[in-house]
Image 1: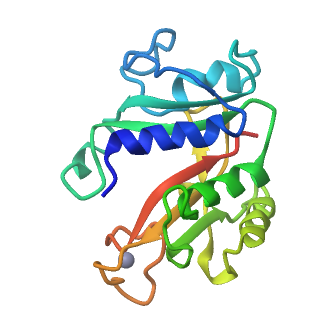
Image 2: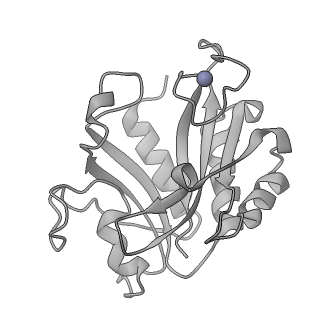
Length: 210
Ligand SMILES: [Zn+2]
């Protein structure tokens, strides 16, 4: 079994080897954002840089961000929800994009050198498109090119595959990765990533601000 510290270490090492600067976690109490009480996502302290302000450490960053999230509080106590947690992040400010982000996520999750999950147990979700924004075919084709078959690429709506910080501000489609848990059977024929029966567990979300 892998310990939390080892997971943090190898994640930062993986992205450091791919040109990312390692930065420290920001405070749990946001310094310049009066809209929230706590830092609730890795994205949070980096919003000014996602909006174009140059970051002193460069265009590729990686970090382990402390987070407190109260929106999930009713779900705390199940197998995957906590109020306090740490979010591992890799960040590109106007540098690499979907193809590289997805290829690296896949490599870190499945390579025996890193986490070594069975690639046949990996499913992904991609934004399906709607009246405002097109289907994310670029993300889907990046998944196909690393070897995820069409039957494990699910196109879902904005509710599940669109990241937004608030009513205004950075947002964009995202692609989520799920590992199937053998010990928990599918709840039925319609069970899919995003179903909360526990068979599919989300392990990663690549957000594409655009
Ligand atoms: Zn299910």
